Length: 124
Ligand SMILES: C[S@@+](CC[C@H](N)C(=O)[O-])C[C@H]1O[C@@H](n2cnc3c(N)ncnc32)[C@H](O)[C@@H]1O
Image (cartoon, rainbow, N blue to C red; front, side, top):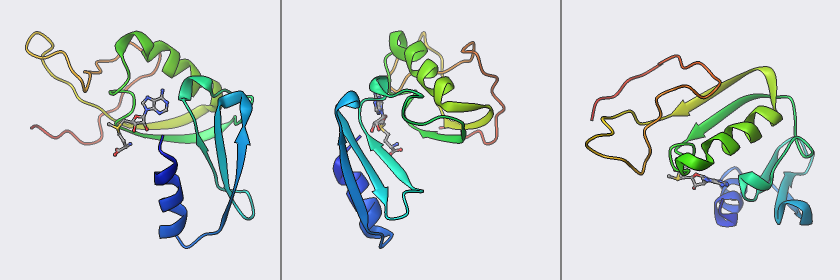
């Protein structure tokens, strides 16, 4: 995650922010002034429910398909640890014939402790 992207988010939304360095995640926490909006800048694998938990929703645009397949389980374990039991997970994925191309972006075809409901399918 880029610090620049986080700073631009606050600028574009005309919000003041404060920043704390968090040694345990080798990264930073950006918060708006009432601290209801919190953006962490760190390697996801350093993150855990020690910092946030009970999240109701995740929007993953291009992340799980970017991580190496051998790291996918670790990625999912982190998400499960910070999400509520009934959290919704909106994810944009690629699905293709792996005999013809093996990524990246990587093909996601289920079997990872969550069920997939297709909302929109775009053939490219
Ligand atoms: C293809 S980019 C997608 C960026 C952005 N979400 C978008 O849709 O334009 C892949 C993104 O996955 C995220 N990502 C992958 N592995 C990560 C990790 N270990 N820790 C934090 N972020 C990670 C990073 O935010 C990276 O920018």
